[in-house]
Picture 1: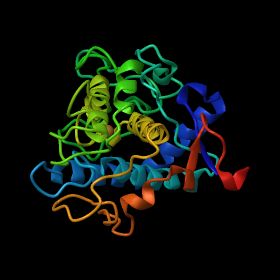
Picture 2 (picture 1 turned 30 degrees about the horizontal axis):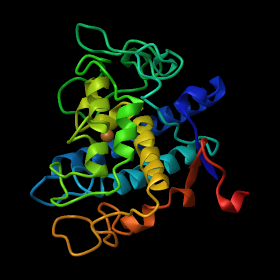
Picture 3 (picture 1 turned 90 degrees about the vertical axis):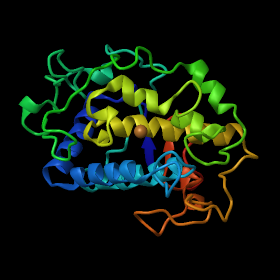
Picture 4 (picture 1 turned 60 degrees about the horizontal axis):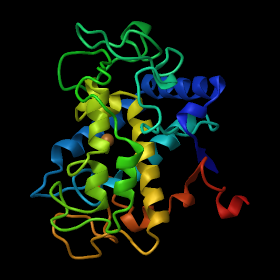
Length: 281
Ligand SMILES: [Cu+2]
């Protein structure tokens, strides 16, 4: 069964394998389809209308399913690969090994934000930005420029202690755990990390930067930690909510998966911080 590891603990060989699988998905065209899907939902999800991927309760189960599909694509290339997560409360500077040239490469140059190092630099020739919101075909970043600080452990802890999953009006104005984690309200966790990275990560085509998957794998882990801390709390709303995915409603674009199906991540993978799934013990 898949174990998702902290990116900081990956061996050089695991980094090479993950990077190679990403480059192969890019080469064979599968990668860009994920970027297109994500941008379509960013454009379509609105506070007053239909909303599925973002600014709504299904933000968490939608991204869990999206990451599972991406991880399955990686594993078709290399069955040994799993999605690492980036704990941005601990690896919180541009000097983290995450941004080294043997992994994701670092920040962009001042002039145009272009990432110049690592396997995803434009110069390396294997990472063209094809699904884009402007003319620039090179990966861009501006680490720590759009906002100075990544969220702290204390800020995360405060959000994990919120006992109610989500609340009406079930959008970017909501109180509760989901919207505080997503970041439209309060200290701002998930959204702020997108802004901190900058470049494509701060746009609807954010999956163009491979760090997207590691960021969302950690957001996903925080959902699992919230569940462990609040065992009596569950996904809301339960039923009958217009424009919003209720617990038993199917989610686009898959139409065969509900938030209820996504509640237990241990059906699919475990994290390196928890015991292996029951069937593996
Ligand atoms: Cu995100």
